[in-house]
Image (cartoon, rainbow, N blue to C red; front, side):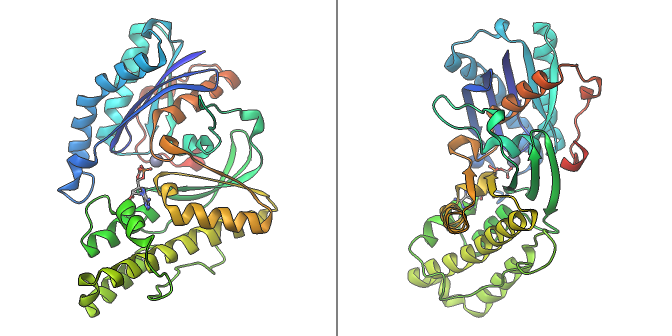
Length: 343
Ligand code: KG4
Ligand code: ZN
């Protein structure tokens, strides 16, 4: 089974070739430079960039895999959730490719693909679905923060999500307040590495709340007030690094604390995490340390599989095809607001 897959739900244009659970190529073209001057993703620009980038990215994916398009047996693309116009570019291109090649087309839920992406390992990267264990999965990116109980393959239940800002959005908004370029998450991470997380303490929203939901907008607001009242911090390199470390520690404490607690509540001894924020050095370190102390097995997304990528879309499509090969007539339209609980 040879799959050509496409991901265009936000600001990454990605195409991949996947064969029998193995990612042969996974090309990701980021649009960060385009959106940086606006301080956030501009949906219309994202869609236009996808249109421009998708053909070269697809050609590169085939060239790197050493595969001809005519050998493909299935085309898959992200169906939702995501920015409507951005989704439409990849979805339409995927349907057209499937039509031209005379092969079936499959629309994939973006978060369902993230659910399994932490299990894609090795060189070449592959996912052995038989190895997936009951686990709690944390999906954290600029657009989403989700805690999901994965009780088995394709069996999942959403435990909680953010009631306001996503974790990555909080990183980015705080970074903007500090004057760091977009997307601020990685920049804040770099500064925080040499900072003292204890010097400035920020709230840990909903950390001890009974629910598995998250909230990050209050934390962002408290940083705004802190900066308003302590302007001098922005001009003092040492204090700025301590500020970044303090904010990062607050976000990471909440993410790690709630994920580990959800696993313990469910009696699950395995955690996985994926999404752009999983690149954060403190989150990786604290999740690793916390899971080691509690005897929990941990799977963190690696490299390109952290951020939005077509490899994870193709991997899931291949597995779904193997489990239930019926074409899905409802795949005719995109679903920008598709909830994971509806899959
Ligand atoms: O999954 P992703 O590439 O795209 C979506 O949002 O769907 O995630 C991007 C988010 C941005 O908010 C970015 O700032 C954040 O992930 N991010 C980080 C780091 N690397 C990426 N946040 C904190 N530390 C990082 N090292
Ligand atoms: Zn994503």
